[in-house]
Length: 574
Image 1 (cartoon, helix red, strand yellow):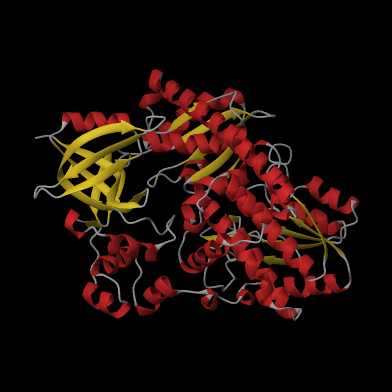
Image 2 (cartoon, rainbow, N blue to C red):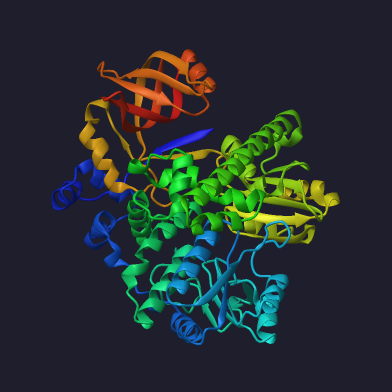
């Protein structure tokens, strides 16, 4: 079930529109995104690289830069240790590229998802020592590796942490005691003592700030590393960071750079996934390019994705890109199979009555449990845990809904887990097989979710009648891009619409086309890509419908037609 509501925020829309040469509709949309005040509106519409903050404002950045400059001049062996996801791979590439450009003796290592698990571990440190490494630089991990770092330090290694995750802490009475690892430098904007103004950076962005600061200190031209912003953009969207503040600039600029990238690997990946390069946007990174980069770390090794970024010849790049695409295709197949098994289990057992879904799929590959959990959450709008048979015991991933703090709820039954971690909307866990049913029962008993909580809230920007839709508005909406978390695509709505000639089309019969007619007789072409069967049946049962939608221009053989892309629908039974 869904609950629709209109966002009604007040401002002088005519005044804002006149000042920034935009329409009052756009002024209202900007206000709905909580962009308030001239400075914020100007940055939102016109922010550029020149508006980014100085990386030296981060706590310990000066220390990190000083140590690395000294190590580079002394030709000491440096190893970058990243993570196996899209953020970790791009952060590793940024540090490797940036350091080697400055003359560093640098190599990389990335943990294996199944064998090593997340982040820095003892075997990665031992491997570095065996290879004669002097300095380890972590990226997108390290802030929670206090023990491993203490071990590395005791073995004579220099360790620099760059990360963007929350700092672990102990609760001491009313206070929090933060557990900062005893590394030589710890650069993480989430440190309580870090005064960097923007906290929402991904790991690759923190790595980029380090490279930039290092260039300045070593008197190299900072503009020479600007091209690495395309990797920051990929990581920011792929790691689902809020597209606000600095991230907005990184993604906007990075997307422009990607359109004419010199990186052979990225060029080959965009070609083989048939991304429309000239119209490249955040969607293509989130749903086409990103999943291919992530597929390496899920089903094989993330080192494949790093090899792609490092590919020097077109031939090598094409081969690696096709490998990653094939891996992602098989990941998609495995996901579809897992989703349908989970749905069958929920629909045919007592699981359907649970407010928190705990689904055990023993044969599912543990690396895709989180993706399946996300898909099940979308279908049922409930918190979901998908458990699989791991190498040792049962492993699982959870995805939550807005009104359920998953990590806090898991803390209440922590005794059932051998290991767990996460945050409000997502989590990971390990437990013994014998505890699965107890976990399902306990997490449901503890939950105080109401029927209201389990209704998805659809936030509509504006009721927009059809006569307001024109090509100029569609073009103007592009000023709000890039869309994503923290900067949602605008959602418009209209009610009492008559549906004319609905028909299901497409090779896989997964597209619904129709015309929508309002009370005044204005018609608009419409298209819907969701659960087309259910939508079609709802249309048959109702004389009129209400839709939320986004306007677009459909181009076919040179002809342009205005259309609405329907997002949500409701029948108005008459």
